[in-house]
Length: 355
Image (tube, rainbow, N blue to C red; front, top):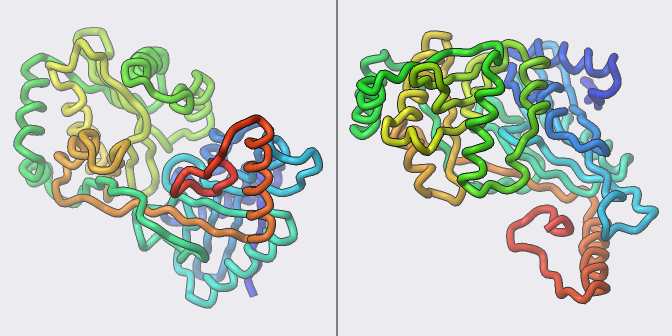
């Protein structure tokens, strides 16, 4: 019987084993690479992966193991942990796994959580059902995401866009905007200037103000798994995007546009060129993502590039230790009360004790 291995990216030999497992997977999604997972780890977190190999396939479940002892409301001797997949689209990922192998994976995973004091798991799932190992827990639709299939010819893709996209791309071209493909991050400083100004304009939360080292780590540790696209007006970058690159898919990740360039529609041109680049590179789909709040303006903008490309983005929750979970919720409630605050977990937030 195949055995699930729990690999820690901080241990060199285990990180090597993790990469070997990832390389054996035909899909090689960037979200399952140890360097990607580590991008989102706090100093106290462990970047880990549950790896499962069979004669004909396997499974990978990358996650961040987070200690509850560091939370201000926790007891000083708190020994529990919880786990979460990093930002983006997580697992468990699988290829060529039977139903019996799937059950074996989750049985061994549950045994590991019990032995290691893991209270709960939260996972953001892949948009592609064929990649998913059926999750042993509650799965719900979070929102819709937009996926642009790349199987059409360039002319067919062009005519599958909404009319306003074609109009805007033509406007950008008439304004002498051009797109530069940057597979090495040589314009990272210009990217950062545009990205951070965009976050300021949108009033983004602190979680979106990734420091320079975050992007430098992508460039340094994930060669071939990313590409920057820059729209230039003369010598100036006016719109830019970091796109993540997997074996079969592209993912719109982080980027921005200068407000003074909105009228020239540079981001429409950028998305159009990203689609053409992905198709030429042999990719099957370009994931544009979803809106901030359901089917908002951001979602509708993305959908204009793929009017029939909406897919449900699902998240998964699993309480491994119900008694410990309830204890932590009550501990948080007691701590808030001791500070004179009535606390009720935010509806739908998981795990509740972190709400």
